[in-house]
Image (cartoon, rainbow, N blue to C red; front, side, top):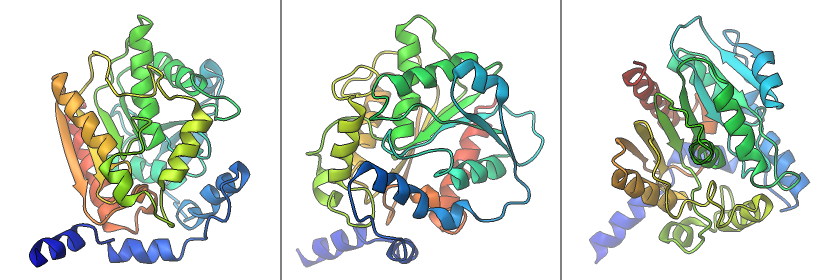
Length: 302
């Protein structure tokens, strides 16, 4: 029994470097929407404001006009490789291109290709299905091959956009799909929510309840994926943080993807909490994850 207990402690131990990062983060003092939006900016400012002289960042005016929403293109080098379209997280309500600037930029550099960033309409001002429709509009507007990915609520939107287009008879076929610590079901009683949902420094079950309430996606076909629609999905890479209350969302979606015959490349990150990609390039596990994403894209470029 003692050995099992020690093993459990090791498996549930927060990585020391991530622990130091989270301990230095400004505390969230209120669950009010305005406070959470401000905290989403302030808590990642150090990484998002870091100088990146190699980055060429510009609005994609053509895509912005077609979608009716801001679309930016992150470019670190000239490349003919298919771009990566990445949907940012933030509970459908508090994230933005600005909160995920470091994620977009580092993805572009290490994957050696353009990264296309959309800021869809946000809940609660624009609840489901408005953000999904923005994602779907972007995917239809793209010309040429592309890869698709997203983190957290962005992973949900990436999957939702594909499902929405398939249901409407406009299927698109990205070369690959990458889902990083996604939220895929409006469930709060999973083992991972019970084990990790009371975190004071990372995503909590209380926050997820609030986000789903803002979004209004509970029970909706392109948001709440208790059962994935039978659509043609590309090779998919999953990134699962071991200490994330949404860990079991990814485990469930993995099983459903296997049932649909989708090729799945799963990566588990011990000692990591939800959102660890934000700490690029300072966190070694985040760098390893981005290397895995780069390899995934290269394998599926053709």
